Amino acid sequence: AALTSIGTNLYALGGNNTKLFGKYDTTNGTWTGLSSAPDTTTSGGALTNDGTYVYATREENTSEFWKYNPGNDTWSVIKDVPATAGAATVNTARGSLAYTATGPSGGPEIYYSSGNSSTDLIGSLFRYKISTNTWPIYSAVPAAPNTFNYGASISNPSGSDIVYALRGVGTGTFWKYL
Image (cartoon, rainbow, N blue to C red; front, side, top):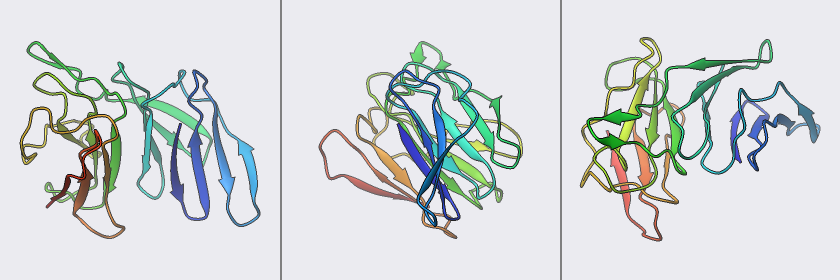
């Protein structure tokens, strides 16, 4: 399961091996069922938004990346999270997403921490460049590989170009990415 908010609405990805997706209106306290996610989600799905669209990763052991349009209640499948580089495979287990309006390239980007642990790309931080539909690896990750792990989380304060990260795995390790 995962949550993100746009305005006064919370968007929820159901998890539990379902395609459930819904919206909670915080003003009137009501839930509305929305178009089903493109595929089932279990653990590891993550959500973020750019103020207009909702972006989602499917779950652990997949590299699927989706975009939801609240204006017309539709999903689209977009560029997968990088799945391999050489012999390394990205395990999207319990990854996290964060949006920034002006990333290093000067345009809007979504950051993704890959979650769980043991090969070159696992534990890496990626950025999705919305304008080019690409996922270049973000090289400023300290101590990679094996940086992020279960329980990792990243966030970006509204209006900021800074991404903050918690490492996960029961540590208190906290990073700031400029």
